[in-house]
Length: 324
Length: 247
Image 1 (tube, chains in turn red, yellow):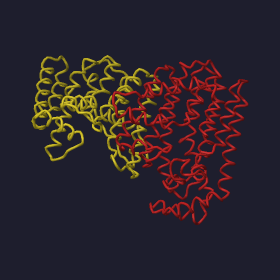
Image 2 (tube, one colour):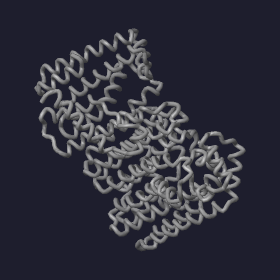
Image 3 (cartoon, chains in turn purple, yellow):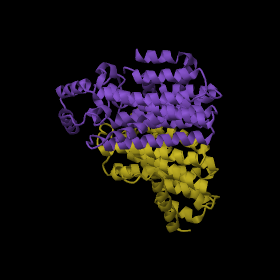
Image 4 (cartoon, one colour):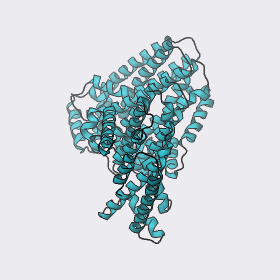
């Protein structure tokens, strides 16, 4: 339902999104039937494709040419997909969006090679753009995302972390790739530096809001909606915003300790979810997400008049209010 | 130039690669990147043979080494259980090295090499995954797979800089060296998944695997010997290759 709503929001981009979808299939076509199966498995799992959508919309503010723009939209989605395949190995996740992950369907090594293959195809694809600036932005983003993941592992179950640590982590984990999607869409369509900056900042703020909402939903959505058990982030040691706002709660502190030792019962998980859901931490987290959304909308206001401004606002607001 | 100079050049390249991928946390948990000195030698072979070599080519050689290190990290991941902190960070060190090679080449504006290396990585992954596929392959197919894994990226580097004349040496020598390793490993009573698959293929061909492997090694040695005899590369390099491959 939520995905349908989002698709409705960018229905007038459908023809170009269909081109991207087809190109994703072409880019992942391999002489290895196992890589083909694993890639197809990934593509069929779908996803919101928000990164390509942000590339397309940002590019609309400049000299829009889908044949040029797709060369950055496709790699960004591929990089996102490849990192998910590797993340599932790191998190030992068997399910994503209600489907078996590549590592669960085959094994960790197949997931590593599939992820590496997809990363490689992403870079191969993007080399059709000769502008070094595009590559410099994308490469820096890839390295920073990785740094973010290293920090995430270092921060697992770490009790003495604060909200600043969390923001630093989600910036690299999520916001950067959305920021780069907007920035690169604008760059490839030849937009001036000032407006590239506004779109880049918009992407950053939306990305921050997106991850905060994701972290809220991990507690508030149902197992079915999430396609995995609610509270999985905390079970894996990822201390997210709602928990940071609640970390002095004795039951939550105890839960983190149990999770670190890997001995959480189903009863404890449900109790933890109950505490988080009825606490103020969710409201406070929503309020922080909204703060980022307002900043994103200010960046939109600063852009020149264009029909796509409304689209950026609508998508940003959807992201802030989505249910899963 | 003598063996010491060659070894020092390889060590210098290694140090440069380490410097470009240095990361405090990754170093702590996953150690230095894994680099194969034989592959590094072939990256440097045109330089050692007196080919025109500049800062850009040197940087490119460093990035090829980084890509090898990246893919080697992912070879360390356990098929079933990668939940330890060390394994999790090994996944990320591979990704980090991969991001770094791209970043270095992007900063240099070297798009042709990015294209060649990314194509090469994709092909290498397609070969590495073959051990998990159900297709029935011949022993020669497996030799081809080993060869691609060992040589594809160096081949791409040679293509970009017009060093293709070194491809035959590199190809024959790196395959020979890897097959010698495989034979040694199996003689010590070990068996990797790749070797199990190769044994399966040899059985279908009705011959003992070790015998076929030894024959292939001997054939490659003869071939390399012939190349060395007719080649005009520097004598010191010929000698180094002979020592490297155990002539």
